[in-house]
Image (cartoon, rainbow, N blue to C red; front, side, top):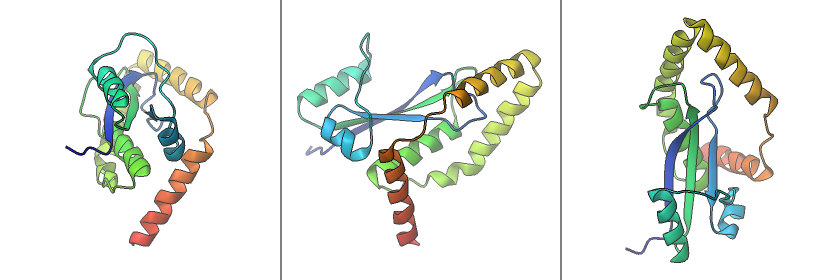
Length: 163
C-alpha cells in the first residue's frame, strides 16, 4: 500500500480533572522521528494490547509509527468527549501540519465541560475530589519542551500564512 507513516490516536483514563486542558502524550519508536516532531520515545514495559502489538510489528518492518494519546478524566463516563477529540486533533495538526479543523469542536467541548461541571458541583464529595485533582495537576505542571514550543510556533505561523 506504500504506507509512509502510521499514526494511532486514542484516549486513556487518567487523573485529569475536567477543569484543565486534557494533555496529549505523543511518542514515536524511531528516535529521529521523535526528535524531529518533538515526541517522546515509548517507555512502557508490561502487558500490551492490539495497538502495542501493531506498533511493535510496524516498527520492526521499518514503517514509521506515531502514537498520540489523550488523558481523560476517569470519573467521567465514556464517550463522546469532544474536549478529548479536540485535543487529539490539535496535537495531530501540530505533529503533521495537516489541518484538522479542531476548532469546530470548541462549542461542543465547552458544552461538555459545562455538563460535567454542573454534575460535579452538585455532589460535594465529587467536588472535593476534583479540587484535589486540580491541586495535583497544578503542582506538577511541567513546562512544555522546546520542541513543543517550536511546534506550536510553526503551527501558528502556518495558520497566519493560510489567512
